[in-house]
Image 1: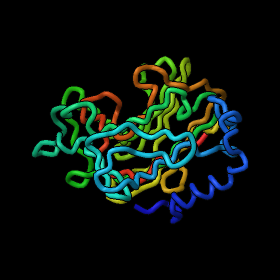
Image 2: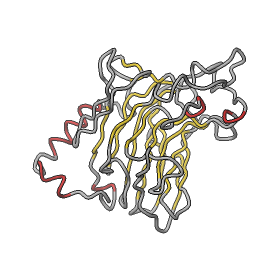
Image 3: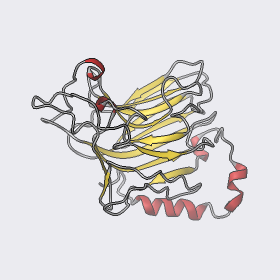
Image 4: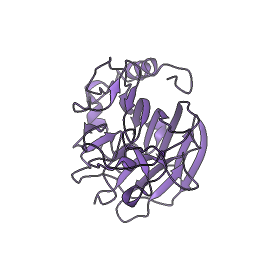
Length: 276
C-alpha cells in the first residue's frame, strides 16, 4: 500500500537515522521515559515497516531501541504489508458477528516493552499507520448479541482500560453514528479519557491515520490522510505509563488477551510508527 505522501517509509527512516548519528549511543541517556516536551523535538523510536517476506512470523522495528515483536500466528506477511484475520472467521451467512476466536493469540502481535519507551509517559506522543479494513457486504459485520453487540475492532493498543498506569488505543468503530471511523483514545490515571475520531475509512482503499498527543499545544489530534479530522483540547494531563499484565507490551491487531471477534481488526496494515 502507498504511503500518504508518496515517500517510501524506509527512505524516511534512513534519513532520520543519518540525521541522528551525532547522538550515537548517548541517545538513551538523553531521553527519559517521560519523553520530549513537544513533538517538534520528537524522535521516531518505533518503525515497523511490515515488509517481512511471505511466511514471516516476527515483526521487526527498523529504528532505534530494537523493540521487535514476539513470534506470532494468524497474521500473514507478503513482503509489503500484513493481513490480519480478526473477525473474518466469525461472521454468519447474514453477515453478523458470531462466536469467539479460536484462541486469544491468533492475529495478536506483541512487542515487549517493559521499560515503557512505547508509552506517552509525561511527554508528547505520536502514532502513525496505514491500513485498509476488510469488508463484508460492502461494510463492517452486523453486530451480534451479548458482548458482540457493540464491536470496536482494536487495531493497536497498550494496556487496558483497567490499567492503573493508564492506556492508549486505536480501534475501528463497528456500530452507531461513528461506524467506520478510527477512534484514538488515551487515558491517564485520575483524568477523563481523551477521545478523537478519524474520517470514515470503509471505501475499500488504504488510509493513513495519525494520532498525536501534543502537550505543548494541549490537544489530542487525529488526521486522516494528512487532514485533521478530530481534536480534543485539555488544560493539563497526567502520565500515561501502562504497567499491568497487558501494559508491558504493545499489541497490534486486536485487544490484548481477548477472544471476542468484536475486539479484533480484520484487514491490512502496511506500517506503524511511534514517535516521542
